[in-house]
Length: 111
Picture 1: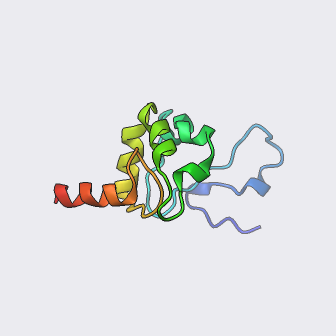
Picture 2: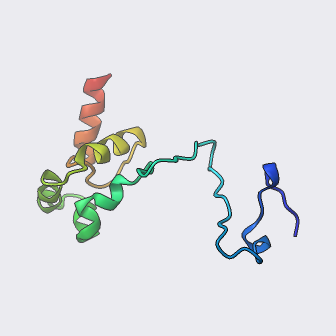
């Protein structure tokens, strides 16, 4: 098999004689590889919404956001969630305890 990776890395299929060796993961879109325990999206693993019904966080137009916001209110990663939604221009759902409309208002006030 062709080895197209720089620096002599190998493909997972090339690693047959060393079962404990793990092939390197290449960063996507120029992102740096995070070496510490906390990955870029590690906060999502601690988010309370990951343990509840996702439909509550994406209500139909005009639907209630009360249940989702109640979960967000006691979530330890609420600020990370809101930061992520603002940085990535999330247009749907409840993120960090705010609806799309509330996040737009927040962004307008910040500018």
